[in-house]
Image (cartoon, rainbow, N blue to C red):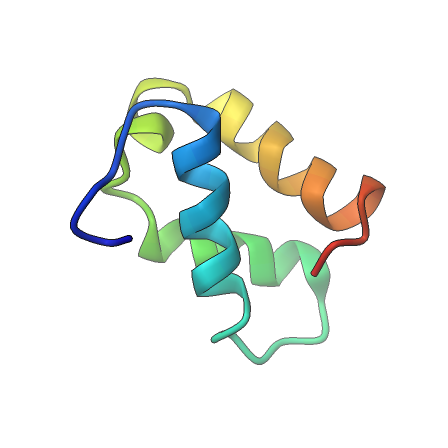
Length: 66
């Protein structure tokens, strides 16, 4: 997926999920920040960092997906 990044929440969520499983950290908020460092060049994160954080927090805290 790294070769196809789009400026939308779905593309960001897929990239976020990929990176999330590679980070070993017990503090969920710190882990989100570490993933954001890795995704700092993602088009959605660049254009809309507030919504990128909301997408990440929704996936982690609401869906308990990861």
